[in-house]
Image (cartoon, helix red, strand yellow):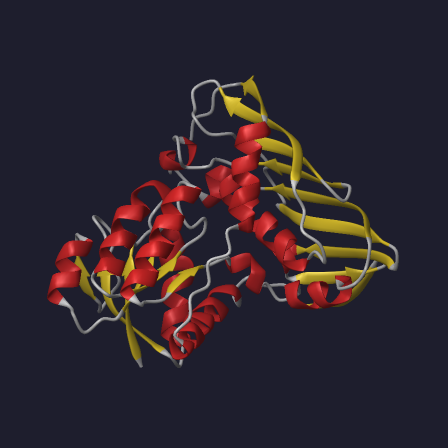
Length: 304
């Protein structure tokens, strides 16, 4: 088993990373780094520098910190010769991820910018079905309740937290993976609460007739859907890419999100065996373009 340290023991680490590692045939969770969180039975550190100094036997670091503080931790791990996995989005800015790529190349270590939604059960099948087909129109509806998924996490509405693009980038990671041809942004509207520095909702227009509706204010049933009209029929992905429909009929997948993180850790093990890195920034480019091109609208204040 390969040893890995998990940095940032919050909701996503406990809900997804820890169970995925516990079930993996490749990995042993050997250390946890967090100011407050711990994992039962795992050696705990409060700072990444302390862990790197104390545990030279751990070759891999998986970072689950929010985007803004993640760069310093990632750079420290890479400079210490450790391989690094980045939770999505891979950073608070494109330029800092480019710098991490340069450090990883210089040190000869693996850097993996993960996109967990690309590992959803129906994404690979959707990519195969769309290959070689013409997209005439597409729409993404990604609406969820921020109070449910990020309870009290004020960082998500701070500068660099990305707001509704934290989940929205999951949709864009699927989109950029399954389309036969690249897509780019043409316009956007971003709704900023009057008391916050990141958007709570966004509407995007892209090439190939594709639009997106992201919203953090949906209560009740949550919606993670995308639909495409093509020259060969209608394709829909439901449940965040886990269920596939072709012309309105079920065509595969599974009604669960619990397969995504095990697939990410299997991919990391593969990258290490191959001595390779995997850093695809195309979803993050679309988000950066939305902030560049987007028209800013002020909406009512938001409080958890």
